[in-house]
Length: 288
Image (cartoon, rainbow, N blue to C red):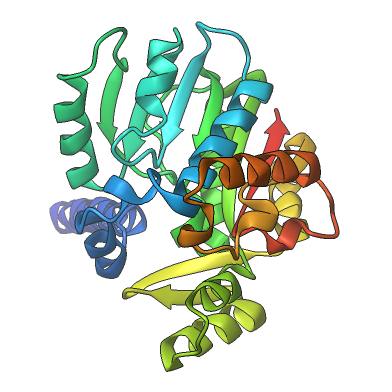
């Protein structure tokens, strides 16, 4: 009888381990739609032209303004193929690129072999909800993507992970998609389509929409700030990334003089609460 009870307990214990492992694997897996979205290589050229170029330049400006001095340790979580990782490494930062898409990690490794100067310290396949780094090991965490595809509960987990790995006084840079981002897409296209209409009203009413079969979650500025503050971050500031330039078509900012005019206007209005939500991307910067 005793042996049967012992065998039963061992079986239950084993099943719990398997179940726990399954749940953990499920928790850290991206949806098939999101995986395919990024495996298509959509991010490869997006930040090199038009409003994508504007997004990159403005992001770099905010990093320049708020990053600590090198050689601070930076975790670029959801960093894609390393569009910011490599530049930061060249500047003397100790950078780790972490991304849940295997395609991105492999592409980043290829790029890393071609760049000159200091390389990232590591390329890690991983999820913002389970960052494989020690407690208080980083000076900075970049979330330039993870919040786009996580529901509210998963965002709480991811933000708590960022808080955990940051040193006291460390900084989180977290970017969210604005609830008005699909409207900017409509203004650029100049016409309404059924899919775009669904995205616009889904974002406005539920903070959720689909683009190319990938689910995106969107924020009002106050929602983003509240999520960081509820995690424990303080001194949270909000900044429009593309700002007033968000609804402008790529064709309108091909001219370099016009582009620089946009940048000056956006730099001057990036924290204006009356227009923050209009920016397709909103950056929250918080301290631990």
